[in-house]
Image 1 (cartoon, helix red, strand yellow):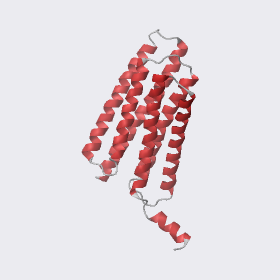
Image 2: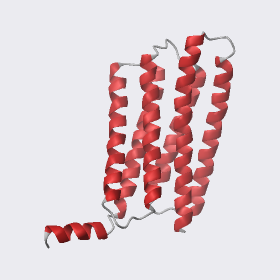
Image 3: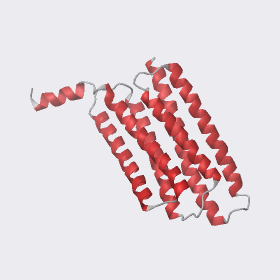
Image 4: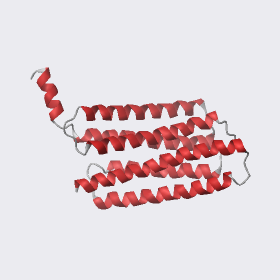
Length: 214
């Protein structure tokens, strides 16, 4: 078979079903690692090794979305809608980028201590990314009941995160903190909240895909 014909066939024939699902799992792994790293920093204090790992996870996430879009661009047939693949991949990358930004800002802002609200929000983010791992572990052969149940659980996690953010904001503006620390902490809380919201958006997108395929 000529190179030209081989190229045409690779474009017409669908890629292995495992390709996109594996890339989703790779993206989710970066999210989970970043969330665990952020919590580790809160417990141990930030070091240069933490910063290097944060950048490593972000780089891996960027490589994953780049690879996903490359495969998508060269595939005529895909196992799920192209728009859904792009949406899910972009959201997974956003989660890692938001958490990485929060990690780096912990160093830039030179905070001397971390609040319980920040630690609670961090634990909630770990719960959300752990749930994402379970979602994508079953995405190749999903059932509506399982994915709907997991989406409801993710909503509960997101709601818990909203409550933590509310209490954190209330504490920040109680007069207990100086104005500069209020700005610093509020910025970090916002990045974590955006990452948590993106976790729910991914879960929601997966449920929509499963419903369309049923």
